[in-house]
Amino acid sequence: MIERLTVRAHLEASAVLAEGDLAIDATAGNGHDTVFLAARVGESGRVLAFDIQAAAIASARSRVEAAGFGGRVRFFEMSHAKMAEHSAPGSVAAILFNLGYLPGGDHRLITRAEETLHALDAALALLKPGGLLSIVCYPGHPGGDAEGEAVIAWACRLPPPFIMEIERRSDTSKSSPFLVLIRRE
Ligand code: SAM
Image (cartoon, rainbow, N blue to C red; front, side, top):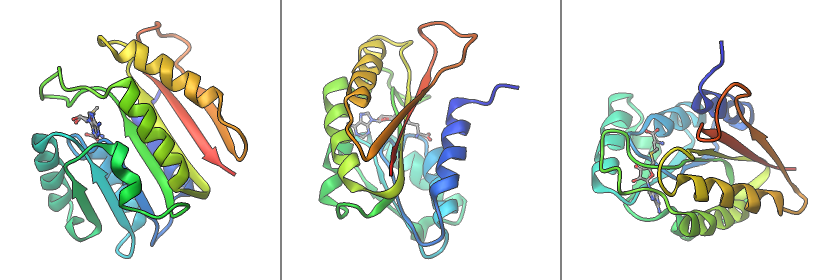
């Protein structure tokens, strides 16, 4: 069976995360990724979770609290482009971006290419050696196609020590989601 790309992103992040790490959920949404990260970094680790929507922060917070991880997560109702103001360069083990709109929310409030690229630049500077930046892109909604292309073009230009990999499902169309993984050597 083909696993979902979000599951794939979690598997890749699991391989680099350890107890006590710092991780970032750049798009908290309904908190599924936040809970995953909080579980992986353990009691002594920390997760910073960003979203521009109050409804998303509330939804993510309630999922995190229900999982018993409230003490491990700090929420920021602000753009992920500001993540560098809240953590030190080279300090973060894994950063997850799950682009697009909030499922069950306002579909007009989407991540936008220009802001996303600013945030990705900020994220690169925060990654520690061995760290992973994961970006799930959704070209199927208006604006998502241009954003996906912008992310690929950005990733293709990255110099060492960053290594880029794109995962697509071979049996799917141009509008299907894809995963971009950036590793810092
Ligand atoms: N990771 C989430 C989960 O596990 O449920 C799903 C994320 S959802 C696909 C995308 C989220 O990105 C939406 O909640 C949206 O509000 C948020 N978003 C859009 N622009 C943003 C920005 N500039 N900074 C942070 N979050 C943003």
